[in-house]
Image (cartoon, rainbow, N blue to C red; front, side, top):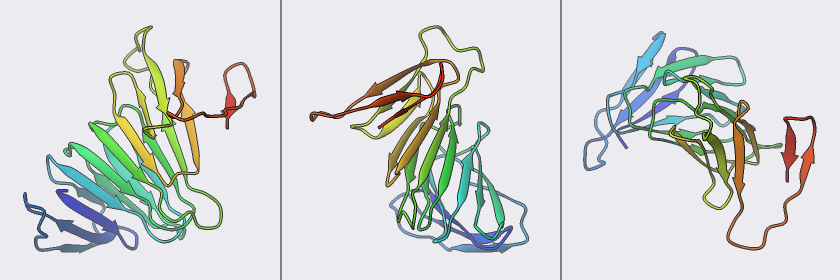
Length: 193
């Protein structure tokens, strides 16, 4: 872990950097800072709050955290190699773009509050996807990925929504006997339970 970023009020929070051995370095607290840039390389962890957060990871590597009071913090994590989203408590919604510029994004749902934590995976058709491209959900490994793009791992997530943007959607079940039910909603949407 290179650094852990924890939002506070709007445009405020703290950054806890770590050295190569994992030992904490001098923490930084900031206020009235519109954009925070994460250090280059390594793994960056973005911490959610104990309330209902909306966390978005964009194709550019920007991570936006909005708490239930409407406080917004945006981090440019694009220089990191890997990203960890620790949503914390509450009923959180995390959205990850398939073309986010990371090798991996690990999403930790945390305490599910009174309802559930939701992970939205948004596929991309840009640049134009090859005919063999697909979005794959592996229920055993708890990952979702689009061919050649970021691998998104998840734990503590109760609802996974996948937009495959017209690409084939592959669902791999676990190594044990699974019972799955697919309910079509339209020609291109459905629910897998």
